[in-house]
Length: 398
Image (cartoon, rainbow, N blue to C red; front, side, top):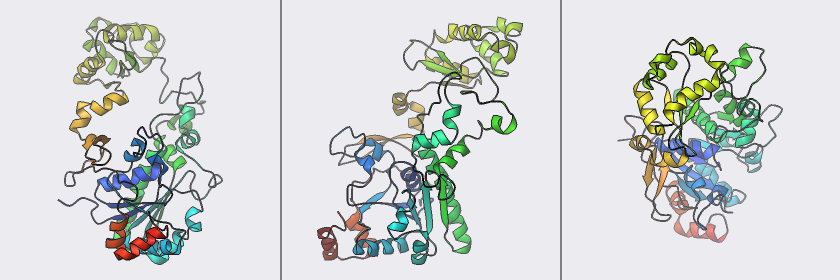
């Protein structure tokens, strides 16, 4: 069965997370992705946070599955000539270099269009290619800071806080994937490529829409930790046996309150004027917490989760990152998969969140450094073996 994006060809020049996560998602869906790296070691996530010396780190493998990899010195005449041929072959060039780098390499958008008028040039920047901040560099936490997330996150009386989720990087990668697919669809109609640009700050702001409702509709000052309305009652409650992550999230607002009481066997509190609505409960936050935890503390977080969820309550066990890897539901949905790797050793990997009924995903291992260089030069560029050997001697490839 053909994959949804079979025939789509991507040159992934990006590094770290935002670009690689985008290219990997496209690879999951069937695109032919070539990770193009420099001759000085390539993507530095190969070694960043590596737990085994000489072996690509999980930081690298988690964002670079379903790709091929090659090296190329773009500062050499031979490298430039090869890149010209790769651009002619490709549908998409993806990069997340600092502003101006692609132009200095001789492969800015106008040059790419000359080589291939149908090329889609996908560019990720911290603050975009225009605007007052456009020359500034950024990464995950600067995007969270300038996108409004940190000021909204944390305790009401505490400092701004970031979030562990890759909202700035992987969130931007998702936005870019949407932009690329839209550009491909438009090219199907008129045959022309275009530039697709996503700024990390913009991506964070887009994901902050629910939190920006207050700012757009009222003059109330920002209060950290508050989304819609104000509550003095926490969302998580302690469970047995009282470990670091033994908590459950329970939604208590609206009609959920009465359902929660019924599940806990506390029907006598239904209709009690002290807790009749959210305003009343906000006046007695400690009492409400005590009511809930007197029951949750006698059960595991999974017992609470299943009992509450079965009754229709919006509830979730607080699953730790370690538990995610072994979670039965995520394994059943192939969000945690086993990857075969004869070089690094088999390992578990995060799968594809997009499920297409006619395009099932097979997660493949991340490529080794320069693993497919000769294959690509032979089959795509059309080079002879002796010419490839010469390129190695001259330092054009590794």
